[in-house]
Every structure is written in structure tokens, then in C-alpha cells.
Length: 244
Image (cartoon, rainbow, N blue to C red; front, side, top):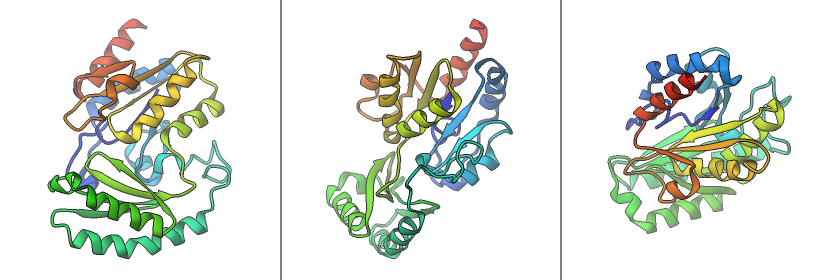
């Protein structure tokens, strides 16, 4: 069973650094881990941050799958990932993104290990201005990066970055599970849900989405099960435990 982090295992907060792992949910999931075999988190957060926050024994894939556990990957990165080029591109874009943020009151830049994010939670009008998105995307492309939209955030990633769908396929190939699920709530999770649909021809696969006013518009089209809010994740876990 794999999960997103923010909005799934932790409540969404204005400052990502203030996010707290839902300990009640973790306690329930720990009971389930013995039944399902593996619990994994696939997140845009850095793997080192995830590893500090998650209980021992959980599998953490950071930066959407760019940062892999060393017991599953010799290099810690997907095959062919050019770390030096990616780092140089991110450094090129960092200063320019800071300039853009300073022109947009209420926005904040987050510097990640393998990405840059422009958060506009609290300044939602930024997301409604497509000129801002076009400028952000142009800035990313000019630095040799790709641009993606998320939940009240725009992100830049290396051109050879992977997505959560790739990460789930990686886990399937390395672990060989008899079934697989993923639970998430954001645009960045759509690739994981789409990959599960492809896997479902070969093994049981369950795509679980969490609804909210900020959920992806295609949530109900790509998920097998849609929860009304994050509190229902615990109820789902309880139901699975009861089912044995």
C-alpha cells in the first residue's frame, strides 16, 4: 500500500515545514503493515525529510521517485538520471524564481533537493492568473527544467524527472507484490492512479483519491474509490483490518 504524504498522511498547512504526520492514522497503518507486507510513501518531499518523519520499516520515495531507497537502488536515483546537469539547471532557475515571487505578494519559494516550488496558498488569485503560470513555465523551460501544476503550487523539476506512476512501477518490479494500491489527493497523484489502471490487467490494483475543494477535476474518473476527506483514510484502514 502506497500513499502520498501531504493531504493524505498529513493535513495540508500553509507552511510545508509545519506539516505533522497524523499519528492516529499511522498507528492504524502499523497494524495493517503486518497484513499487507509493505507500506510506502511516494511524495514530492525530499526523501531525507520523509525518512525522519515516517516510522521505521516504511519505504520512502522522495522527489516523486527521483530519490530512491538504497536497498532498492544502487545509485539512489532512476537509471540515467544526470544529477550534475539537474543541479545546475535548478541553480540557474532559483534566483529568477525568487524575483518572480517578490513580485507576487503572498507567494513563497520552496527549495527542494531536486525541485523548486512557488506556493501561492493564501494568494489564490495567483493561480487564477494564467499569465503567471506562463511566466513560470517559461522560466523553467529557459533553465532546462519542466513545469508542473499542483495543489496551490507550481513546481519545477529536472527534464529527466520521473513521476509517481513511474515510482509505483518501480516498487512493483522491486518488491513483486500480489496487489498494490495508492492513496492521494493532488494533481501530482494522477500519474500514479493512471499507472494503477494499467497494472490492473495483471494484478489487483486500487486507486484511492481524497476529495476536497482543491482536488483534481478528474478525480472521479481516474480513481476506483473516492473518500470524502482525509479523515476517511483511517476508516478505510479500519475496514481493511476488519476484513482480515
